[in-house]
Amino acid sequence: MYNHLNSIVLIGMPGAGKSTLGILLAKELGLDFIDTDIAIQVREGCTLQEILDRNDYLYLREVEEQVLLSEDIRGKVVATGGSAVYSAVGMARLSDSARIVFLDVPLQQLRKRIGNFASRGIARKPNQSLESLFRERCTLYRQYAHITVDCNQQSLQQSLDSVLQQLRA
Image (tube, rainbow, N blue to C red; front, side, top):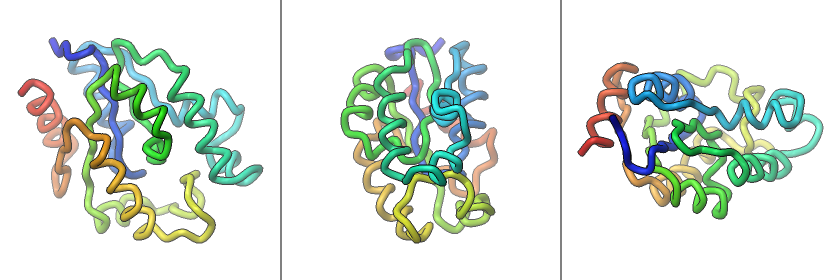
C-alpha cells in the first residue's frame, strides 16, 4: 500500500483528468477521495460557473484557498481545481502533507477535451484564452509538483499506471 504521507494531490489544467483519475487512484491505493471543486460548490451552494457569474474569478480563487486550507486531506487523494496553484499558502499546506502530482496534458489535447471553456466554471481573467491560461498555469504546476506525469496520448489506465509507478519509485 502507498504510504508516503498517505495523501496525494493531483494538479493540472481543467480537462487533465484529475477527478476521474483521482477516483481510480484512491480505489487502487485504498484511500478516500476529495474533489476540491465539489467542496467549493457545496460550501457556496452553487456551481463554479454560478460563483463566477455572481462574483468574479478572484472571489472563486479566494473560496478555493479557504477550501485548500480547511479540508482534511489525510489519507486522501485530492483532485484540486485547476486554479489551486494560485494560492501559495494553500499549495504550501498541501505540499507539506502530500505528494503533489502534476497531470501534464498538452494544450491540443485539452482543447479537444474542454468543449465548454466559456461556461465550465474556470477561474480566469475576463476574456483570457485557453492558450494564455495554459502558459500561465503550467509554470506554476511545474513549480509545485513533486511528480510530473506526461499524459500525452495516454489512456486513462496508462496514466493511472504512470502515476502509480512514479509514486512507488
